[in-house]
Amino acid sequence: MDYKRTYTKSCHFQSQCTVLINMGKYFGQKKIVDDMIWSFSRYKSFVQCPRQWERAYILKDPTRIDNYYAQWGSICHQVLQEHYKGELNKGKMKDRFLDLYNATTMMPCPFKGEEKHIEAACDYFDEFEDIRKQNESLEVFAVEKELRCTINGWYWFKFIPDLLLVNRETGNFVIADHKSSDLKLGTKNKAINEKIAGYEEQLYIYSIGVQQLYGRPVEKLYINSIKGKRWLDLGFDKEKQKDAKGAFIYTVNEIAQEEKFECKPDNFMCKNLCQYRVNDCPHGYFEK
Image 1: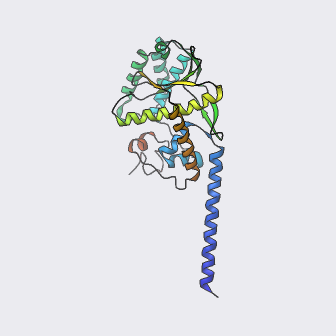
Image 2: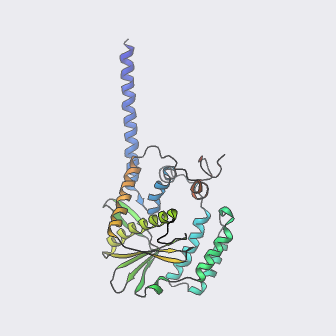
Image 3: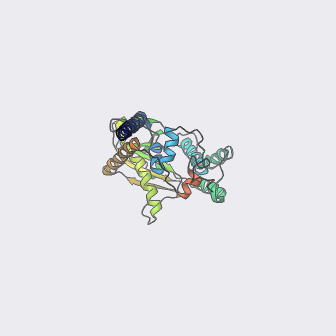
């Protein structure tokens, strides 16, 4: 027997099998990506940590847990939602926050910051300024309404603008989003500027859907900084809208071709925010 020839054939066969398995994996994964209904959080989850994304959307790991900051932000969102729907006046917003907070089983707040967060929310609602006070030509069009569009004519995208307004004078849309962080334009703080850029990208992607669905332009974007107690006027830049769309398409294609789904360790994220921080992730809460 020609063992050398047999070994060579065997290696070639194994190599072909590996290629076929990898191709099957790729096309199976690409089908999941192509069939997926995307959202901004689903898209950004991969950028934040590929391993977290794989566990949530490929493996469908059910062991997700919440975090204090998300719960706190959700309660603030609910109060603002009720206000802009006309169900809650300004004078009752703080009490409504406290009622909802006390009725929620909260996760532990890192760094013993619970009292600080309660005070921040109470101060915000005591001094709350409705965006319609700043611009009286604005009227509410939709509050937390789920909308769906396509990105690049292919990818289905689901989005829920916190606040969609119309300028009565121009007929154009204004999109506003509530964010927990203390944010300020023009700062030299790199971390804050990066946060604002990420939130801005989200609003530009939303603007694509709003224009697609309603056939009217978006003229301005706002961020409502809850801890900062201020509205950030981002204006509107068509080039930034194109960039946001391009970044989304690039990342989705990257996900379809990803093989390793490796962790992207970040100390604060891994120990306080990651949905899978208390299980077997080596960078999570129970790291030895």
